[in-house]
Image (cartoon, rainbow, N blue to C red; front, side):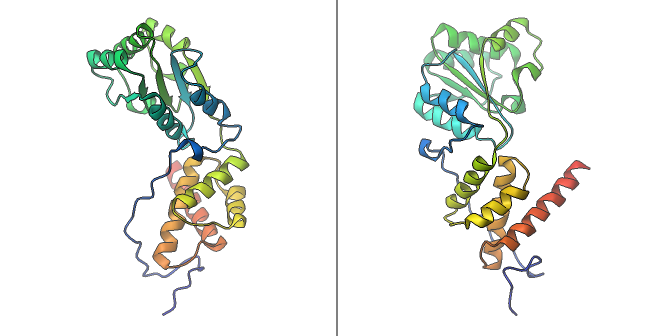
Length: 239
């Protein structure tokens, strides 16, 4: 029985393959320069010449915050702090080297610990980079001294991706999977998909997954099928 790799429905008995990892490259040369991320890239590149010891990088999920934070972490030999519950440990880390906190709005934090960590950064002429999906003004902070420190921080926003950035990201995601993608398929996706890098990551992953399962190629028909699946999944998530 032939399995039409271009069929929207595929084979009813199709089995998805084992999921092998496709780690994205976080090298500086892989950064895609585009207006939504230019300010953030510039700030990472100019370290340690920062306008303030504390920089907060704000942007939506999948906007490239982790890529930028990883580049800065390597450049600054910074320490990633996973737990803001230990006050003494946080202050000790900031006293010895630059520090990084990722997804602070997702993980939560002790206000007192964050305040002491920031103070330690100032006292030791060090630096702190924080990534977040929301602006600091939206964080549930009651401690006045911490509010003051956060207002003094430099906040850089990564905007929603434009067509150029979205297209380059899709090409890079396929390249990470060693797939040379037809520019016409990239254009087709950009014109129809949700305007987010998180959507690009999920859509490229699903297209690759289905193509492998069907032993077929990446086609516009496959792209159309996956876009329909993404839209349906989004409708279900919104219920």
